[in-house]
Length: 494
Image (cartoon, rainbow, N blue to C red):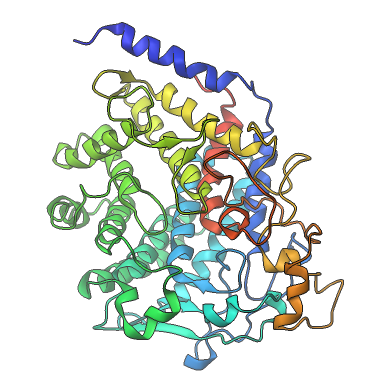
């Protein structure tokens, strides 16, 4: 048996992280703004209660080349393209946030979160409306879009529709779409059971497509040039098959999906690349999700998933012998490649979810030389949240509109160009360049947007052109909603 001092000393090291900046943040305000961000990313016909009032209708002819309605959904980031892969992941994470932490949300914010989910699922249902033989994976030509700096309301670039017909594969996008629809069906089960049934039925169809025609969507010649290098499947499609099956198992408790994740774990690489979680790689999230059945349901035939989840968590513990996740000098989780806060928010989410699973079963995490309590995992997550909200060397909130100091020049077309309400005349493709190159703050505040974040040196230059740091994305915000909801109810977790 390991000496108790290891566990205690480790907790003593970590606990100050949760209290040094002592509850100085308004997590409820941050949660409200984090959800509000999604209204600024909407495509399609905007509702009467639209709160980001500088936006207007856009993309109203999307899908016409296929004689199909593909209006709605979200623009992924600071451009005007609807990429299906990250949109589906965003929707999955919005739903998972509500499933795990909805009980901590103030009622009006729970409603707003559900509205944000439905804006995603209504669109995703359209993308699978021609199943079992076709899935729509994207609307908008990113090359022509990225060559313009124009408002979504003015869009005159090609609204190319990218579709994949069987037997061509799209296991990644179809699998993630299945996960999103399945998870969302749990969210709407009590309030709108008919809609929940529709979501689940379509999730099952999307999973069948993903599993029957196996392969990466970006390997299709008619799609590759439109999705790469932006949202290529870099990490393989196998994780999405397991991820979607795991969600369908969670929702239905069907033994067939249990058999699938149990029997296909090894062949589909469940134990590979286990230290990543994001729009492309689902492994760490998959392992945490499946671990619930091991911890709470004693499904020991899934123990390998829990072992992988444990291993991932231990990489985050600086004092652990298996630690290898990098932190900046000021304590922010850091992975190279740009848009770093996507890793911070998704990992923080997994820390809190896993901590809850452990706490409910009165278990701790064994990291070789130390035992790590659920409290310690929550303390790491809180350190990340407080850094994002302003406890960092720049004294800057990386959430737009939160506190008095936040990025003013984010890489976002709609935010940086005059609102169509103030400047109703069209601003053509290249006419927007003057606004892109301007040193002035963006005229429209995209409240709640989380930018890509600072570099490895904890430095952030408020530069519109530096998209790796200054561009917001939907999949940075989505998991942060669950994280903030937890801290609304537990500002000083113990």
